[in-house]
Figure 1 (tube, rainbow, N blue to C red):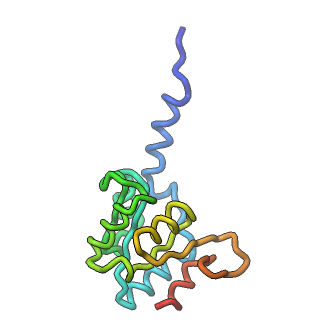
Figure 2 (tube, helix red, strand yellow):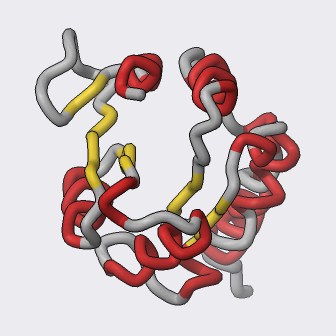
Figure 3 (tube, one colour):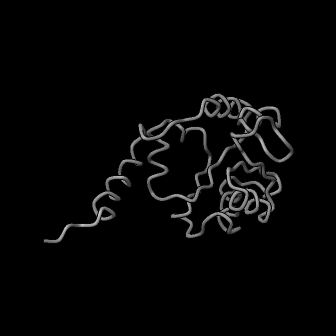
Length: 146
């Protein structure tokens, strides 16, 4: 008798579960910040190391309407840290890299990758007690940067 390993039975279910909007929680600062930045006329984009579930999931959460460009690694063929994915974002937004502020949660992929591509970058670290240079604990801090 052969029993399939859990990785063959469990992983597909788990993978599909993260396609569902109710599997995700939007932090309290996300919607007010996106709304405020959009009201200021700031073009927003997403650069993500993700797969083909991202864009439909953002649509189902109602977040896609805030973004002029959504650059996903599975579509570009390069992931963050590669300058190619950042270059694609600048191209889709129609602005030079030096005029883009990238916000991410990884020092290596986000901050280092963005800076290597000529973007300004800030790390979001929700564990901070208070903001420090180059790091913010809430997206609401972005509103004061523009």
